[in-house]
Amino acid sequence: MRCKDAKKRFIALIENKLSSNEKNRLEEHLKVCNECSQLFEKVNSTWAGFNGSEQIKPSPYLWTRLEQRIIEYDEKRNSIFDWLRLPGRWLQPVAAATLIVIGIVIGYYLGNFPTSETEALYANAEEREVVLQDFFESNYLNTFSDGFEGSIGEAYLSMESDF
Image: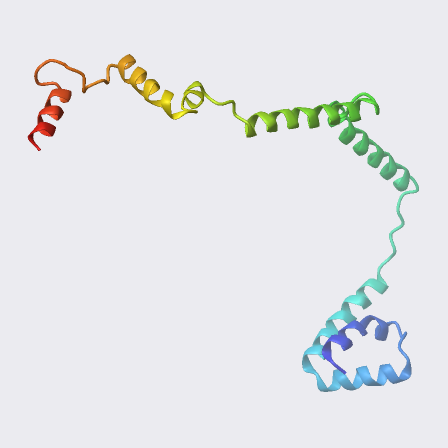
């Protein structure tokens, strides 16, 4: 017999609930295995201590009080989350449908950003040059126009003419 099986049968041996064959096998194992025999002695002495003690009888009102405490606990726990519940069964599907519609609308707008004015202007190549020129002029970046001496445009044009 293995130690694992022997340990499972200790209480049954103490209470004489084993068949004679199982009892003989367990006793043989306890003679051979030092660890199991020491553990069995501890279990047996602990069990014997319980048999000699007086059984405590609970108060007749124990179950009534216990049930009342459980009911009070449930009521307290439910009252905390009452504000989360919607006030009717018909309102729950309406709220769910509203949330779904809001989600679809938000998803649509996040997925399809409206095109900006500059993208619309870049749509054809002819207008692109006009848009760039307007951008440079409006932001004073048109450095290649005839400007004052020493400007970036003047320096670039002079370098380009040297080549």
